[in-house]
Image (cartoon, rainbow, N blue to C red; front, top):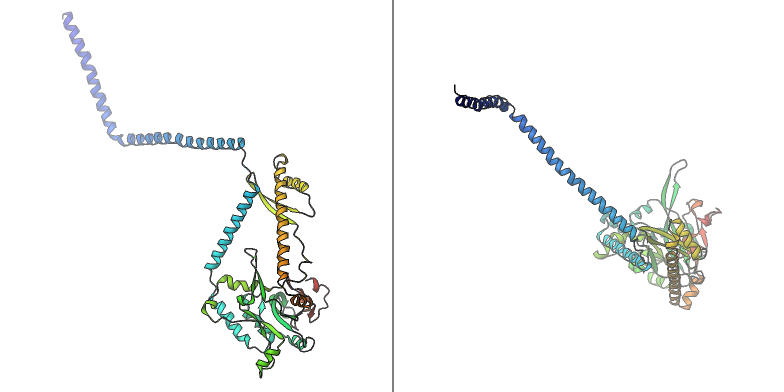
Length: 428
């Protein structure tokens, strides 16, 4: 065979051989490929999920790192630029605004709340029943008693015959004004029995040439303020005690016995009292400004305030009689871990401001007493100075509960009935 033909045959063999091998390999690969389609697809989905998850994770880490970096920058900026300390005037304005908003919130809640109708109706029914009672102590209105507890006050009978005897004998020919109150005491009704809290009625007899002031004071526990109001605004009045029913007109002209009575409201507007109005009865006490109030006036010496320093509220106090401003300022810095070099002067200035405010407050309180005393006539002042109050407990009351204290406006009674031999009763 010639050389040229041998070369062509070799080239054709080389060209056809790879084709045959490729066909065989493709046939072999086609068979398993049909069986392994799904696993391959699953692997691909897994790998894609892994890839996508892998792509998202670095993004999340990057956001966190960015937030941390921003936080560090803010802290560094805060350290570089210290927080501005509020001035005393700004703190005072914020406190005033906060107290105003709190009062408005309380007033709104009080207006929304309405008293339980059955409780108020039961109270009015009780007042109607006792109005014609033969027992004098039941007709006398008991100031400072909760409306819901008033009907239960007369479940137990009390003996005040000694008070009526004193009115006929010791206090004969003198003007007497009677008002009631209740005192909560833990009493044992039976020997060996348990102790329970009971409201004990007490009657105070005021011996005075002129009637005591027809005013009541109501202290609000929520706002901390005191409201002075006339009797009539709380349906109260002095009612003459008429022993002789045959000639009531003549007795009314000659009557020198009066007791505090509750006037039952007639109109629907007065009957529907708000919750705040009904609760107010338990905080009422007879108000009288003593003619010696100016002499007994003691200015307030305690200062209490707070300051916002370095983002924390620091409560501070001082007694103007016992503490010096410089010494107390150092003590305050030490108590609150404040840097004296940075805050000592600021604390001193605030103490001076608070001291001036307290001095102004005491001055206004003294001026208010002087103004109130000027409203009394000379005869009224003489009557108030000569006035005496006698306190009556029930005859069967335990001896240890009898105390001369009446309230903060009337002070202590001149005498307590029945007399108590307990040496500690005067301090109760």
